[in-house]
Image (cartoon, rainbow, N blue to C red; front, side, top):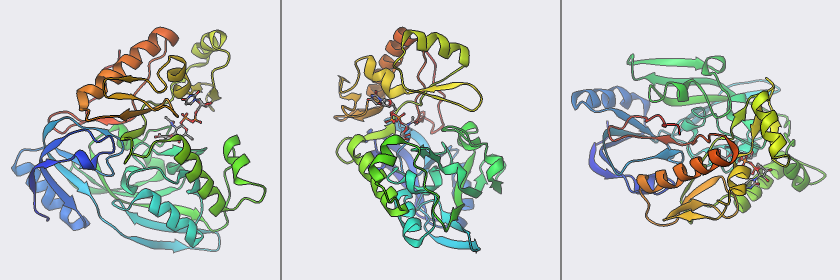
Length: 346
Ligand code: EPU
């Protein structure tokens, strides 16, 4: 096991750049270190907080916890036939690099998910998605350590309960330490061009490479780079309204972008709601919503968790007053004991 470091600064390890210090920190670069790490946490009576790319977390200024940083690397082909390849990848690989590498090798499916920040191990937790594709569609298998039962467990895709920004790993937050996963990818690209903007910009002779480059361009134009504008991607989930709620909503706001779901419910664009409420490019203190995409909350200074909470709770209240819709944050919030803190709904 690697050396445990104390009072370790995580400011550079979360993309919102919130000032944060964990009492104990250890990096994992091989799976056989997990049992020792779990043992250490037990001996020192610490909760384990699993850190991946830090692109979807809200960290408190100081917390008492063993922060386990998943940095294990490696990729291997598990099986292959004429049409498909199954690749096993370790959790610590950088997501975007993995997507580019697969595409370059002629293994397709993940192109629409290019440039999503973070590491591979975090992808299944909130089932990352963009431009009509979700990671869960390609995941075949997940290897994890159950911190509650203290044993290794495997999940098939069906057992992961993937849904919009959701999975069993998000539902039972903090229980499973994911250390590897496998993706089943196509050798013949089946390009997903159902987003009008993507289809238009990829051109008349689309290829997987062109699609990937188009996604990179679109994201770079709309979404702020964390190095320049610290952020955690979309800050709120797009709310899902029942058919009845939607009927009332759309009568009052006929121009609202929305997407009908298979079960009859309707997803509404949170970015539009925030924009309409006047929050696009608006700040409260050092924290505000990005001027080119109202769904992205940015730390414009040296904000801490309280500053972020003040801004997002103000927005939640205003959206509720204007639209009678409750916006739910997407990032996971950590408390002073390193545990996942459920959101208190307004
Ligand atoms: N909109 C506005 N004003 C804004 C932002 C958006 O009016 O400031 C409108 C747009 O015009 C559009 C609609 O809202 O009609 C939806 O916007 P967009 O297509 O940009 O997507 P999104 O719903 O804001 C979702 C994901 C993104 C993903 C994109 C593309 C969520 C919470 N977010 O954003 O994911 O990249 O679709 O598929 O589902 C992330 O989760 O971090 C993320 C960036």
